[in-house]
Image (cartoon, rainbow, N blue to C red; front, side, top):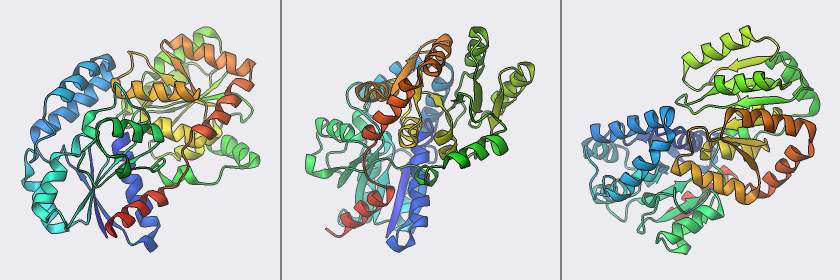
Amino acid sequence: MRVLILTSSTGGGHDMRAEAFRTWAAALPELGLETKQFAALEESHGIYAFGVWLYNTIQNYAPYMHHVYFNFLEVVPVVRTSKPLGAEKYRALLEEYRPDIILSVHDSLNHGFFEYARAVLGADKVKCVTYCGELFGGYGFSRHWVNKDADLFIGAVPECCDAAVSCGIPRERTQVGGFMLRRVFYDPPETPAERVAYFEKELQLDPGKFTVLLSASRQGAQNHLRFLEAIKRRGISTQVVALCGKNQEAEKQVRDWGVANPSIRTRVLPSNTNVGKLMRSVSAVLARPGTGTTSEAIRSRCPLLLNCLGSAMPQEWITVKFCRKHRIAETVHRPDDLARFVAAWQAGPSLPAGIRERMVTACPPGHPRDVLQKLINLTKK
């Protein structure tokens, strides 16, 4: 069975889920799924590619401006046409690959790309499926996620499926699938001895000291230095591990800061780090409220601090609402907030422990294998 996965590099979560689908399909050959990934926006037309660039630029420098960007795209039917712009490359791919399933993991790819695939391949020859990793409905949940004529809408959590139903898709064509994450997030948890060895040998940090992970988007959006300065200014006794995505300049800046401030032990890790093992081992993670890192933190039971410096984008705001509903995160609006929460969690270990316990309930049941099986079952109907 051939699955064509449509994605785009706005932020990092969409590509992460697409790659997770591919690696799980390869790891489970008994299911008989063959996959191919297509960066539908970037590879189709210059207007789409410009939109991707603009999205990532706003995320890096002015997150509050995403309210303008988001609301513009909600009104203007750029992605809801019956034929995508620059459809020639997409058509050639469809005719060569002949997919049995078109799987979209991006909100902009559930209309024109579905309808055009049915026109090229035949409506009875291909199933069109959306996997949506969003965590809540309301403002910030794009109406473009929902195509009323899609064969199936798979939501990561029940709240996501509820949002899809409110946008018009029949309830019977929605299913909760759980988190589609990389395989490292489904590894068995480390034993206490393994965690100690990991800290001492790989991270070269003290396993008994409170350790904060500063996360960044895959594209490198971050403000690590502002948080490090706040920790220093407030005299917080902690260790820091930093991920910088693809931002090599940020990596150098954080390393240089660590050399200049040896009292706060700081480690910068490469983008190919086993983030699952890292999240299961650190004391807390600070990250933008994107669905990808938030889902990873929930799965890892890693106490979560939501980085809302510069305001939250609409699509981040629905993640904040999910976290508030389940009481699994604290929101950071200023650099000093991070230092304040770290100090409070150090003084009261029951606070982060309570978050870990509530994450168990907030984490949806299921396994990526179950999502792949849903695709197989769909083609048998």
